Length: 117
Image (cartoon, rainbow, N blue to C red; front, side, top):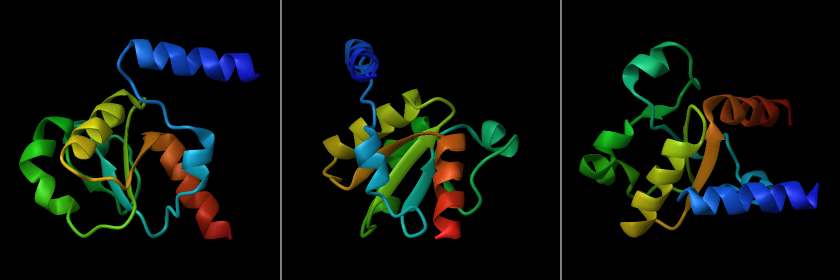
């Protein structure tokens, strides 16, 4: 199992993606986080996380002010690739409290899990 995780992390690094570790994801309070879906509005209309803010990746840099004074920020998309890019953009602009949540389904599962606690 450890070899698989390390291989996935290596592949993600080689392709310029920053994977979110399970530990990083487990330390996030999803019910209080600023949830940001970086998919297009058309994709979000097909299914998404209730209460999340839609800021498409191609609009992210023009909308940085929306991230000011937020606690934990969780970015997500369809597969985790665009959210990885979003995390990088945010970190380059000084935001240090950003987590790549992966896919919207993964984030929805974490939100649902938090409701049960």
